[in-house]
Structures are given as C-alpha cells and as structure tokens.
Length: 210
Image 1 (spheres, rainbow, N blue to C red):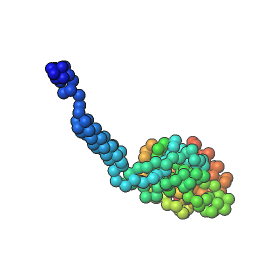
Image 2 (cartoon, helix red, strand yellow; image 1 turned 60 degrees about the vertical axis):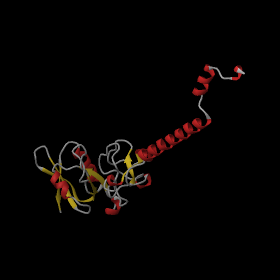
Image 3 (cartoon, rainbow, N blue to C red; image 1 turned 180 degrees about the vertical axis):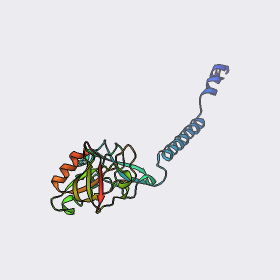
C-alpha cells in the first residue's frame, strides 16, 4: 500500500508542473498582451490629423528643362504643410518646366512650374527666358501679364536694352529662400531671348515697366 503513495520527488514535480487551468490562464494573458501591443503599434503608426498627397522634386532641378516622371515623387504629409496650389500627381508636372531652381524634396506648386499657357500663346513665336534681377524689390513688384523692357549694364556702365515689351509669364515665388534664386519667366522674341540669356551670364539685369 505504501508503494501507491507518491514519493517526495514526485510531489515536487507535480507542484511545479502547470495544470490545465494555469496553462489556459497563461495563454489568455499572453493573448491579451499581444492584443494590447498590436493596438499600441496601430495607434502610434497611424498619422495624426488629416493627411494630404503632394508632389515633390525627386532631385535638384534647374529652370528650363522639361520634367519627367523620374524628376518627381508623390509623398504624404500633414495637411497643414501642403500649400494651397500644391501639385498632387506626376501628371500635373510631367512635360512642364520649373520656373527656377528647386531643391530635392521641395514641394512643387503651381507657382513653381510653368502653366499650360505657353510663350506662343502669350506672343506668337515668343520664347520663355528665366530672369533673376539685381534688385529684389523689383522682383516683388512683378506680376503675370506685366510688360517690361530688360536692361543690362555695359562695361562702360551705360545701359543696354536687350528686350522690349517682354511679358511676365510667371512671377517669382515670394517664399523662395536666399539659397533659392528668385526667378521670373519672361516671354520675348527668340533673338531677344538669346541676348538676355547670354547677358545674364556676366551682367546683372534690370527691368523697366511699360
């Protein structure tokens, strides 16, 4: 009869072995912990507030060249960071030109790319030329549709009129930083466009409103 009684070692093993009830409780606790963890991850990974889809420059861009799909990328940002005239898809920009230097990652807006109104629509046979003026205050006054003469300074300090009655197609972006040259796009004849582009390489430019 004594052989049927559990030994001390057997009693210790039985006490240490988890029973069915304890195993079930442990599993339920683990499942609850995992559910809480999943909820925390979902809440912390979810963006706070409304989001907006914007188009950004995938690399540094210069004025004049036609944008391709490789030049832009779509990003999601908090809605309060999206400008009012932001471009939202590659179709809004591909085939168009930026109005001035654009940094990689910069959000593209309607003011940063040429509109569908081409130079030829402004003036038959016209060409668009990016122009940065010596006087930043004058740049602030430019508005699309303004008509100006473009003037450079000769070596003897006398003025040289490079273009007459050029039309402002795109005004410079007011939010441009010091690192981003503020550029206006002017529509003028082909010969005047070449003269202005060449002079801009070595001489500061000014405009005279007509």
